[in-house]
Image 1 (cartoon, protein in one colour):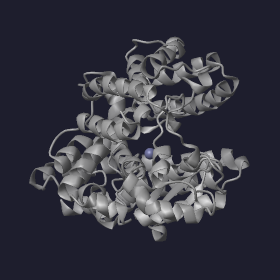
Image 2: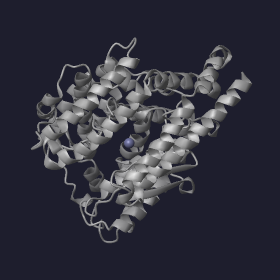
Image 3: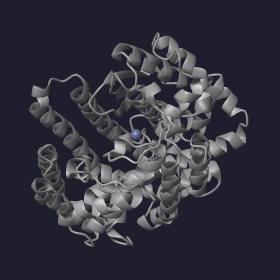
Image 4: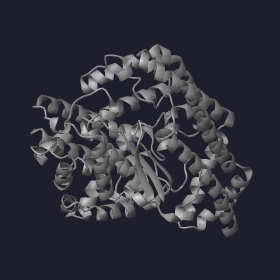
Length: 506
Ligand code: ZN
């Protein structure tokens, strides 16, 4: 077994390096590459990724994975080796069952659909986008047909690609009761006097914002020896190894949270990536290596933990607010820390998901989850999407988009083929609160640590419980291991009601 394992690791190291090299090019494309370089860069990335795919799906790798299956019986299921053999088989089977010609067709169609989506959004005309989206979804259904064996709902196949071990039935069991609670909370907040957020809407010079963002990111634990912070159109985190994790942010001069909270969010993702055990290094499973975050929702649980649970808490700002006042001389002198905290937690139904507050955010996600599920199952047609979207916006948030560019066409996800991805944003938010509750139970003085600006022990706890495991465990497994129970919506509702009940005096 040891010989086969060593051989497999050697193959996977090459896969890892190819994927990491492609990731460097992707990072460069989003940060420093001149726009004119887009076409050749797309070829370069595609070549590296397809080589990674070819190495991973080679007969040799398949044979080694099969040879190692009997060894699973003797291995500790929690060992790195067992996780590697288990996950390698799962990924190999998926890659082997879906014809590569279909994957190529999907990629080409999604590339075209994304270009059309951009034009259609600019023209505010869904009818331009509609035929392209239909093609993307037809191919998704074809893709699902190769993997749907045993799935209760074909949509579960897509969910599983981003969130292993979660089904649409499990998500519905969480979302359905949560939706009623959120709708009610949004209405109650809407009836209360609105919070004044003008303190966050003053003039904050770009350089000072970037400098302050760096201070905050470093304080919460982001390691600049093993990472960078740069600007890009859309904030993101990307890793080439745990030793080199890049984050980006964006800046609006007249709205501080826009960059600051994005930076904290991405730093939360990066802390996760920087904390994966070195023992998982260079285990390049395709499409994601073993030394990366477990899943989309676990990743979001980390980013939202830092952004919302910590970063939008009063305790956090009791530490950082004097530094913010010093970072922006004269701008915040007349502001009280409590007013600043309230400004960061203003709740208002709005059209755009990425700019939504903590309370309304979940409703944006539920809407997308319901539509995706219905589209993949053929209960809804693409032509009806705008109407269905707007009806739900009215029902959940009480507002209707004036046109589809700020409605059904606002996100890049569907054109890019990311179907089954949205629910994870909310699952992550829900889990972040369960983690916070567990942390406070184990370390009752943790809030005082936050007030003093001490984040090392919080990070150490997350490293121990979550980060070091990389992709070893699924969300249900991690939830059981860390909190002793399954994913639950009740703590999340309790957290929101307590926090925003206080902010809005409900
Ligand atoms: Zn995120």
